[in-house]
Length: 251
Image 1: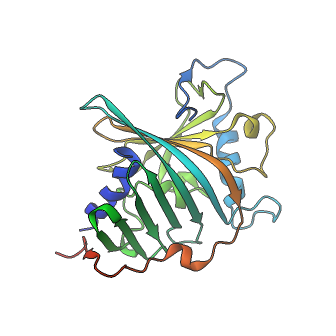
Image 2: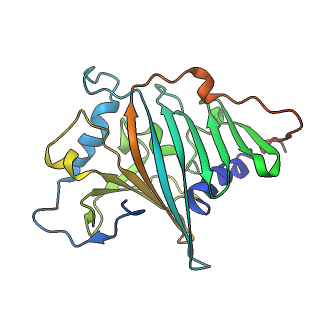
């Protein structure tokens, strides 16, 4: 089954663990802070269009991230941070690398075909074939390969309140297919991007993931760089000698 591997993506993204200090507290919307859903959607999607102009097109990005995960049943939160690199692949899953530095070292890597979840402290790596699951509603990172067309996989709405305390505009995505791991994803669009209609700026400041159990994971991106053309080896993993290999897809 693929689910155990997805759980290990979502767990660091939700329990150990897609937006200011770590995520801004929403504030009531006003005439000055509301924005049309179509405008927000266009600002998010424009840089990721296959035919986007070269001066705004985003093929990849890397950033630092801060994270706060809140476990509803325990009423407890946990912080983490690390680095992420993402390369968008046309009509395929995005290639990505999430390197968690705190609270525990973890590495979640995919080339769009294989997925590696490496847990150094457990001396274990889980390897899964992800190609057959590209349409899975249980993919918590589905939004990363939907940025060119959010309506392909999500219903889109503006939440109430419509802005976060730090000024970010909010856009909520609800998966069109039922998911055991994602109820909604709320994307944070920096205030400056919206107010100045900056299509040449990275439009995603962070994301909040809500799961069906009421747990939330807030991610904030920082130090973003785009179109750095990461080497292919960034999205590959060589298993160190002596590390236990687990294949969650095996029955």
